Amino acid sequence: MNKIKIGTGDWIVVCDGRKALILENLGDRVFPNLHKKEVHEHPDASTHAQGSDAPGSVHQSMGSARSSIEQTDWHDQSERAFLKALAGRLNVAVTTGETSALTIVASPRALGMIRPDYSDAVRKAVHGEIAKDLVKMPIHEIEKQLLS
Image (spheres, helix red, strand yellow):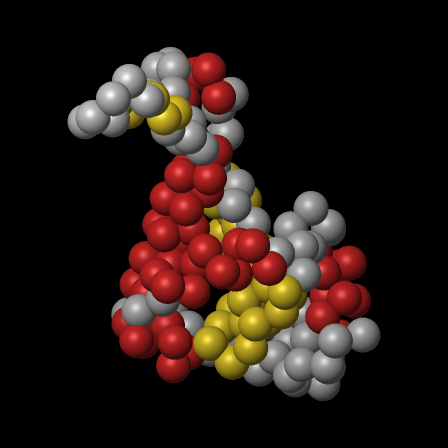
C-alpha cells in the first residue's frame, strides 16, 4: 500500500457493510492525529427476521416446466442501503463545508457498493481509496496501517 498524505481537517472514512467510522485528522501531514468524529452502525438482523417468504417459482407459458427464483439476499440489500446512506452523509459533509477532503478505507466489496452512490461533490473530495477492511481495528492501529 502506498503511503498516503492526510491533511489537517481531512476525513478518513473506514467502513464495511455494517459499520462506518468517520475519523478526522487533527494533526498535520507529517504527524497525523486521527480522532473519532462519528460512528455509524447498522444492525444486521437474521435472515428469518428480514424476510419470511419462500423463494418463488415461475411456470412456463407452454408445457409444465417450472423454474425456481433465487431467494432475495436480505443481508446484501441491507448493506447496500447502509452504504447508500453513508454516501448521502458524506455528500452533506462535503457540500456544507464540514470537510473538503476524504479518504475512503473499505473492503473491496464495500468499495464496489458505495462508489456508484458518490455524488459529484464527493467524487471530487475523495483523495484516495484503500481496499482494506480495517473497521474492527482500534484507531491507533488504523493510523499505523494507513501510514505504513
